[in-house]
Length: 254
Image (tube, rainbow, N blue to C red; front, side, top):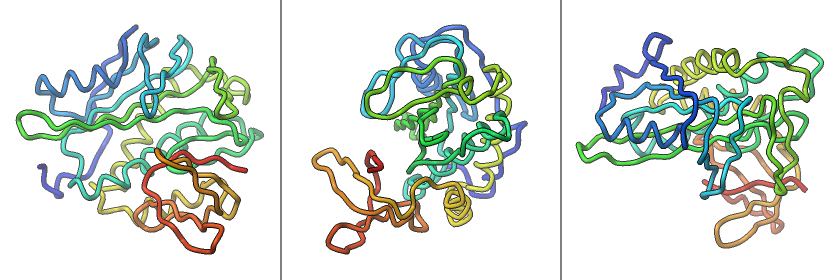
């Protein structure tokens, strides 16, 4: 793995490949990694024909939105990767806030990395990883942001940037994201900056103290959202008063 001495990121460290159409920008990044790409590669597409969300859900990818994936190779020791989604969420939050009018509804982060505008989802983030045959580890951060088009989603209220008064283009929004992600990864510093990341994340957190339902693969748990710990785990105060740390799950406000 790369040395922690090489953890600092700058804009010049990243490359960008802009595609017109592809099945999935995440899939393209993984293919490039298998072919030996050194990482720090952004792939964007005007349209995806096979976009996917968490847990294999399809992600509608019509033209007019931003579809971007970032390939990282050996981004951190495996035991530090759990906090990466929080750093990614901060970057996307900064990019979205930067293109909205001042009078727009609040932009918040729903644990771990959903970006909400006025409590409506405007972004999907899918992080995938794969061990490569040569011993490297490829990690891909896939980001879809609703700019002009929004999918019907029975699970969450949704919105898009056009509805919020922004006339930003996908290219302009990507420029904001490109810069914000470089900064966030620099602060995250291969996981060593987790305390700074979690402190910044709490500033924009949605629903701390509120009643939530957390859907796990095998059950649903009710309780209050007590915040996150210094490693980014959700702290759920259950109905019997216990604090339960949760590493992964779908959160719904009640």
